[in-house]
Image (cartoon, rainbow, N blue to C red):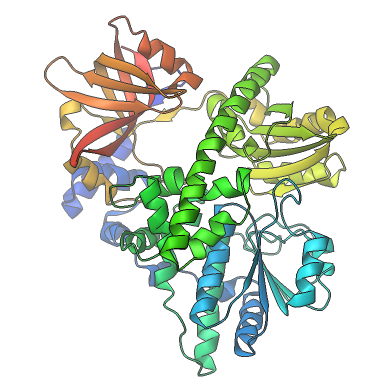
Length: 580
């Protein structure tokens, strides 16, 4: 049964409410715990029983963090890393060019620096070298280093790792593994095929952190001391976890929660400079990591110099940090301009093919490979389907894909690569990359669509919009939002509660930037709330609400605190609407 009678919203979705069982569970939770009703609703939806509520609200990292040795090769990886530190060997870090790769590299660089050891950072150029280790780079590093650590990459890099003659190689990764592993000292990856998979929700930085935990255990066993404080590194782990869209459940939730506290202390020069250039004027939240800091760290790898983000995160020099943050902020602005142009063309092309296919895809000559992943995300959000966007150049295409819940895109891309239709491809369930010959573009996309259809991607209708309940504008207060935040942080795998605000009139509506909409909403009885809808004009929401003609609407979205001029107010992050 639909909520508020909304069977088809402006974005084509049916609204669903919490259901009688969930409402009863929330009431029981409130009776047992005395916690505020809105918080009990969130806990009940998460399946938290009353006797575990207080523990859930105050997660203890030491209780939730798994024993690192549960991952295969972990002891060997930490032992070789510790040996390199003891013998003062030359260590190189080969990292991916995204936030997870940069954070993973920074974790190792900072830890080694605290141990009095300098390391070499190598991040491949996205355009010239592509993702992951390549033979020339690995052979070059092997000539001057004793140990090469590949972070957020390397699990499928058999040839490049074999080319690193004369150096030992350790891989710390989380991308889907193949049937065989590269021949090296250790491949630590919770998504290896021979792993149980219950730790597969960790990003690469989480894996690196667990390796440092194991290194510390081994060092203590040898009487070498504990080394640097690992908890002080959790700001980097939190940034990577959120930016890589890893689910904020289990240990990840505790890591991010603690990491946000560390970040609030403003001790890391790179993150301080980045927060300042992003004009962050409140305590950091998961939103800031995902939408303000993460994109700027990524900008270097997307359209600038690949190592800028990792260098910023690793530096201990405030002056260098300020210069790097300023450059990344400039690159992020350039990235947005490039993205907007590619997004418009990709949406038009994909719409011509049809948004109801198992795979929504678009490809264009000269599309910058640094923005195709973001545009794929936009296509996925607009259509509710797995999406792939490919930039073509000199007869070759480099693309990126994003998936929806329940559809394993990484496995499908890996299968297509194994069948020879892609030059290479891999990733994980929700995000993956690929390279192909332009002549294979159509057959490769057809085959990928077939594989996704077998998983049910072709049968996906518009997704239901799940709502926590109903609120009137006057009840949406800063106090209410702070109560709900106790169940956070919210993000992938742990979405913030979404509420319906019924039968409101639009008092003010204005387009902001390329595609956003700013609104002021009122119930006509004195209750009002401001709202912001990002990407509104990529959907039917923008034009309908801008040209509302005095009609009343039901609105749905998440509540957030808006800080302006030192004052705080409740704001609706609008996601959907339906005519009342």
